[in-house]
Length: 585
Image (cartoon, rainbow, N blue to C red):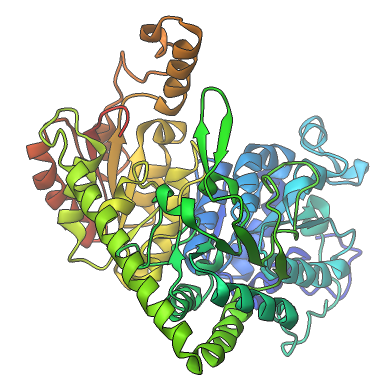
């Protein structure tokens, strides 16, 4: 400590720890870095490693664990990224968290910005002006305080922005020299009475009235929820609204919005869209993917709802739009757009509809008759899916449906959670998603699955739920070291490898190109396959301290292997079963 410093009361990085503790974060994920060595020491020796730090093998995994945790709970974790280089490593994961509207409190470090305090070379090459520019287009806010007195207020503002719907990641950058400087006096925190985030935004009551008018007048209404089910009570309120109004429901599946075996569920039944006359979007960002038939090779879209179909919405589609990325998707014209939180808008819509239905016997009969008709269609679609699942039942490698059913038979009597991948919709067609926590929503692309799944499993660990990750092989190859994290921190999870030994999504695109151009389809695998040599994922899992079996390509051997793995998961261990699947459904 500098002999000239008087009234020493600790280190300035202690103030950052005080802020972290004030907001009750459950965990901190990080990959080590010298730029936050001051903060690291404070977390351990001043803060007592509470919240606990989790060492991650890559910055993307650190962000993705927080992503999965927030996706499952709505609660944010802290992620610490080393300087400029750690931030750049994490960029893709931060972008996906932004797309998925999950809150993550990302802490970075830089500098020192004071040139006189920089170490030769390393502190120069790892420092940027301004570091937050690297992620500014896909975080909700970033800030770099210039003094320790600026830390508490900016921390509080960042937390509030992060937790205001639509939620998303924020980035706070702390100068290395600021962290490592002695604290010479008390730095006040926001008062304990201060709210962490503002109350939810209520939609315009006149817009909700107009939506109620249209919903009760429609002959074939459909609810289209995307993120509404993720918030507390959202799943239940969508069920209530559908049953009250006799509306069909198409669950977009970025959250679990509606029970898939409910008689009003028509998710993935595209023929039902062709006679729909009103679609009510409930916090929808991407309308188009659900409502069109796509000719993938030619990039031609056919709109499935009829020309007279009306569209209305409650949600946040126009808020938090990036000025850089086009994640907002194609705009859907709507006759009514109620900007605000569905946690307020749906209950108010239910209240209005109840009052109007109660005194109208003709409307009551119309709704009752429609519910019967939708239920019949649901049963027809569900029965066809069960029949389709039996095709090529004994094939080796396994069909997607066979693998989905083998896993279901093993976990259906447990209190289970599916992390992300759903075998190109086969799982949604065959399992019973009856509770809102069963599935936090689909993955966001290659190299996101294992990290997000670890976060989901961490969120459910204390509840002793059986967390299942149907894990693509190509995704795990991006960061196989993530298995070590599961073993080190005792995160129990049943990993079932959906191993088709390829990056087959792109392989399928090359087949489309070959068919369109008349070129050789047999060459489509070049640059896409994961064989010669084939990764041994069972051995990989064992080498990382997890339980591992496989590869298994005989369908009869899958269930016994899953049962053995499940027994290990119940002991609190991560277990992997490597199953070899066909290339496509």
